Length: 203
Image (tube, one colour):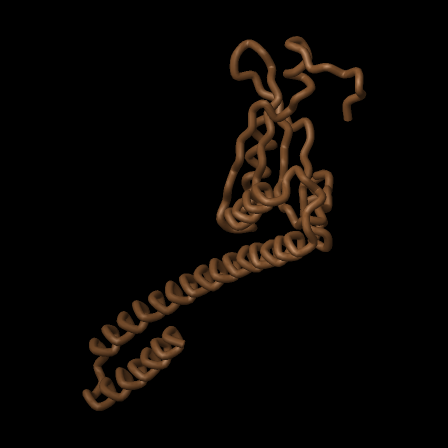
């Protein structure tokens, strides 16, 4: 990047070194990234954004938002933003790194074992890639569990609402001017329906 004659000075280092100020944002679920991305863009002036992805990852979610793609053979995943802001009377540049908790774990291990030395033993490289796949699978599993939890909660809410309506219906039946045997038969049918719903909720 810099020529042999380039020197960092007191006058130029703030301009040339863009990550003197760095913030790392760790989120739990993969899908949480978009809301963080929107917040960053709404809050600060973004100079540059770059998605570090594993080769073969889906790029569309980033490219449609104008984010540069940087495929990483190591599997390192993280979205980086360079922003401008004015904390005092001087404008400064800062870097924000956004990644999941599993990507953070892998990134720290990879950083400890292989960065910045690119000449790592093949056995280490292969095992790091395996660890990267496990981290990616953990992200997918976390999102799947979250989806199941949300669907389950919606189903339980729906069943609870149905149960309330059934109890109201039973109360109305009790007030009907019909024979007791007819009331009992109607209530029994409602109870059968209620039991069927409870069985479904336990599956």
